[in-house]
Amino acid sequence: MVNNIKKVIKNKAMILILLVLLFIISFFLSVGNGAVKISPAEIVKSIFFKDNNTNYQIIWNVRLPRTLVAALVGVCLSLSGVILQGIMKNPLAGPNIIGVSSGAGLFALIILILFPQYYYLVPMGAFCGALFATLIIYILAWKGGAQPTRLVLAGVAVSSLFSAGTNALMTFFPDRVQGVLNFMVGGLSAVTWEDFKMIVPYTILGLCLVIFLPNKLNILMLGDEMATGLGLNVEKTRFLFIILSSLLAGSAVSVVGLLGFVGLIVPHIGRVIIGSDHRFLFPGIILLGSSTVMLCDTLARTLFAPVEIPVGIIMSVLGGPFFLYLLKLRGENS
Image (cartoon, rainbow, N blue to C red; front, side, top):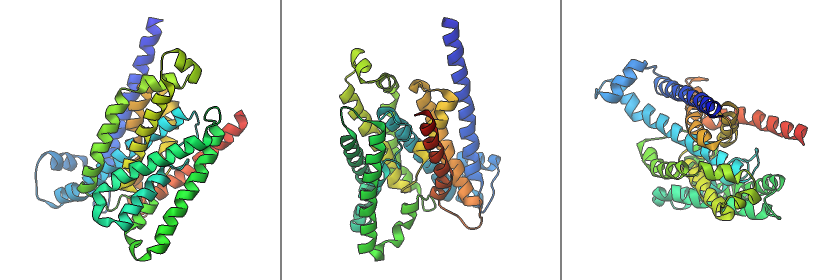
């Protein structure tokens, strides 16, 4: 028994090491590719040694902040997705699918369009919007428990309402829409160090909370009755996870906009390669989510070069078929 446990841990540790390598490769691909290709050696040199040549300026002023923000956005959306799927016991749950991102986006756009002078409050506004959306969805779906099908249906309805609010804003303030188009489709083209500074504290706070919670989510996945029998305060724990998932989704949306499907795709891939134990799944998701967004953003920059497309389009192309596959899978298993 002990040997089997050691073998499982060893296998999962090996998978995490491979994911670390994937993260490193994704980082160098992201920083090194674009209108000007830069070698890994030049990237390392520019990061650790100051040099005022062209490559140094490109890396520090354009590529590095964009790559780091892409990584943090991937972490936030992926963790938010895996938490939502866990507490709602629904594999179709994701920040953009059930309306959490729409709520965050609407509140963020209210600040960006109506109160642009308070731009620094966008992360807090997005968090409030995500939390508000999640609570509404959960309340609407509750009927002696949160039923998976009701959650999705409630999420679709809430998402439509928030989308209507977003469209209304764009209709009534057409002169201010041009500045938020990149936000609407989920893009990283205008990201700067200021955006990095804005998302970092919220990401760090979310990660610090995540470190202490994998066992609680494992217990919660066993069902409310068994979790209560094991001494877990189910409602308090679930509400804590709702706040955490909203914080993570809101911080990502505040910087990159309405980037979809990251929180749906990455958790499923993570479970396939590393299993459902959140003690290993959380770190795996952190590495896989950051790598996914960095790679997709690199693809968005280079696929139709010199024309750049928003990373949200790439994620939608990948996520749409994946969502349909999950629906088909659930239909076959029901």
